[in-house]
Length: 138
Image 1 (cartoon, rainbow, N blue to C red):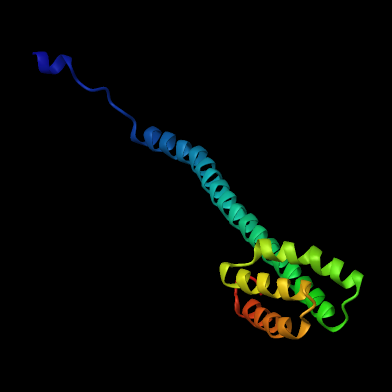
Image 2 (cartoon, rainbow, N blue to C red):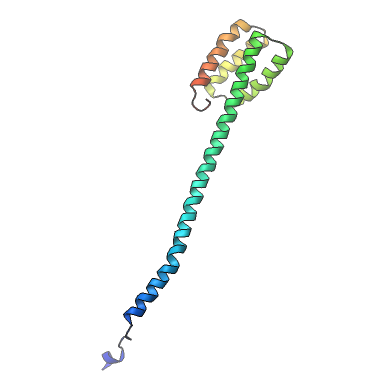
């Protein structure tokens, strides 16, 4: 007797399917939009990081190119303007230089300050070669 009093109500199958399809039609585009926005945000962050890295590399390249240009100008024609420009870029380049270049740069700078241009020339040439081989600079 108790079993008959707890009978489940009859559910219209076509109504249930219609409700489920309607819910899917509403929820599905929302989920796709959320997933698409998350993906787009991640891609944009990667693009920003790549742009920052590229700008950093270009800036460092510019600093090292100017350092080498002004060091060469000092070696071949050392006037007060050339020395001033060299000094400006020497410290900027030194701040970006990897450890393997710093010692040579400091040695070349000391020789150049003592007007020992012939001794500084091969060191500057060596620095130029090392800069060119470094993939993080050039």
